Amino acid sequence: MGYTTLKFPEGSRFLVTGGAGFIGSNLCEAILKLGYKVRCLDDLSTGFQKNVDLFIGNPNYEFMKGDIKDLDTCLAACDGMDYVMNEAAWGSVPRSIEMPLFYCANNIMGTLNMMEAARRKGVKKFVYASSSSVYGDEPNLPKTEGREGNLLSPYALTKRCDEEWGKQYSRHYGLPTIGLRYFNVFGRRQDPDGAYAAVIPKFIKQLLKGERPTINGDGRQSRDFTYVENVVEANLKACLAPEEASGEAFNVAYGGREYLIDIYYTLTKALGVDVEPNFGPDRKGDIKHSNADISKAKRLLGYDPDYDFARGLNEAIEWYKVALQS
Image (cartoon, rainbow, N blue to C red; front, side, top):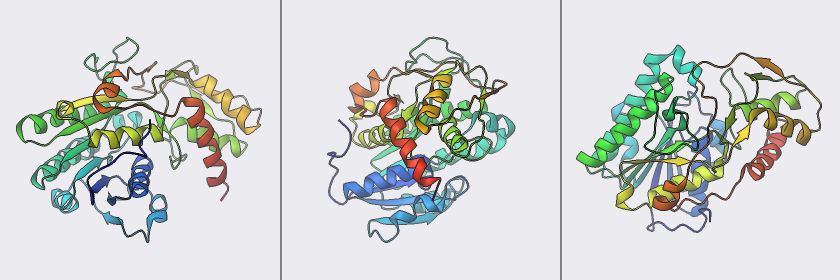
């Protein structure tokens, strides 16, 4: 269970791109706790310096400011690294519809630059963030690898392209790649602000401030909300995965299904507030329901998530209570 007992070769070195972001900073923290070296690459366009300030002074931690759209930066970042965890990407389905060229440059070409740099520098394993959005309009639940539908957004397209490039780099260039299809990750250090903020931290912040949150749609959409500790486990175990996992993509979730309206009322109860939500229009490009089959990740990665939704939500609430009032 979990990842705290995982063992890597002595002196192993990890590069986390997007390391000052939500998931990336949690990966950096976990690697440092395991006693290994980590280099954080981030241009701070969506990540925050405050997310990694707590690592300053740790002799195993190094920060490198740079952009994955620049190949020379990627080559420098991969120099001397054993494992790469590529989290650098721009999220948000609706924003990708507004900015298709930028998403192509950042999420596709940036990831391709990283794969090429990792190949040239002899990296042992390249693990990258994909997304449940690659399932598109495929209606069946649970979502199962190999059964994908029509893509519904430029963001989803970028992640599907990353997966295809991952296959090519494993097949032709000898770089073992593993794609992780994240399902609605939440937890500490996830940004609650901005028009495209994820729903759980956004609701928590608004409720703590006495505001009335807006739910897009009727609230009956469901998601496989996944606590960030499970995602950390999947990334670390992917670095140790057998050769047969190379070139593959895996669902990373808990395997549950939560309705947005139920989450909302769970939060109001936990925070001791009595506020009814507003209801707004559905978001363009969003899927209605999402739930993951995680059997492939269990079989090939040894993925065995510790945190169910309730446990993760409780930890997230406690973290935000402190973080938002400090």
